[in-house]
Length: 386
Image (cartoon, one colour):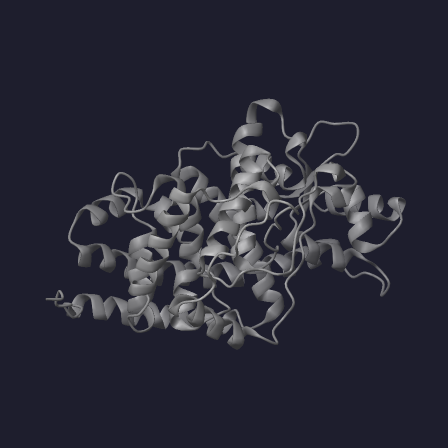
C-alpha cells in the first residue's frame, strides 16, 4: 500500500503564499535584461562565497575576486581557499548558463548519460519561456588574457539539458576541474557516483511533481539539508547547493529568477540546523520562509546595484560621447576584478587607453588595487565585494 501524502498545513500554505508574492516582485524587477545580468553575476559571487563558508572555508572576498582573474595571482597563503571559492563560482556560472559544459576529450567518450525524464521535460519548458531574452555574457577562460593558454579547458555548446544525469555530471566536472587542476574533459562519474546522482535526480523529480512552489520547496528540502543531516552523498553537497538556486525557477516557471539560497543558509545556520532535525514539514516551513526572505533580499540587491551604477556615473561625471568609461562601468558588474590588459581586450582599446580608464576609476574611488605586483596588477570594484 502506498503511503498517504499529507496535505500541507495552514502554516505552510501561508508561508508558500508569502514566498510566491516575494518571488513575483523579484521576477518583476528582473525582467529588465541589464538589471538581471548585474544581479545574476553578483548573486553567483555571493553564492559561491557563502557555499564555501558552509564548508568551513575561510573566504577572503578580495582574494576570491583576484582568483576570478587567475589563482596564481593570489598570495600562496590564501590560494587554496580562493581556488575553492572560484570552483563554486564556476559551478554557479554553469547553472546560470553563462559558461558551457566542459567537453570530454576525444578518446575519453562514454555512452551519453540519459537526458530524459519529467525533470528534464519541466526544465525544457522553463527554457522555452526564457527563449528570446538577453544573451548571457560569455565569461572567458584565463587563457583569454594570454595566461595559462595551454591549460585552458575545452568547452562545447552542446550542454546537456538541466536536471539530467549528464548535466549533473557536467556541473560536478566544473567543480572538480577547478579544485583538482585536472582536465575536465578526462573527468567522469564513477559507477557508484553515477548511481548516487541518478537516485538524487529521481528524488528531485518526485519532489518537483508537487505544484509550483510546493514542489520547489520539496526540491530544496532534498538539496539543502545541512550536515550532519545530509540525505545526499557528501561529495554531491556542493553541486546540490548550486542546484538549489535553480529549483524554485524550475517549479514556478520563473526563468529570470536565480535564488542564492546558500547565502541565507549561511546567514542562519543555527535555525537551519534545528529545522532540518525536526519534522519534515518544519524543515519545509523554514525553507518557504527563507525563499521569501531570499527573494526580498535579491529584489533589494537588484535595486541597490541600480543605485551603485547611478552613483558611479555621478562620481566620474559627464563624459564625451566617445568615452569608453560607461562601458567599463557596466563591465565591472560582470567582472569586478580586472587588469589593464583585460580592459584592453574587453573594450578593444589600446593599452594606453585602458590604463587611462583604470586610472580614472582609481581616482574616483571606484577601483582599488588588490595585488602588490609590478606587472599584471589586479584592480577590484570596492562596492561589489561579495
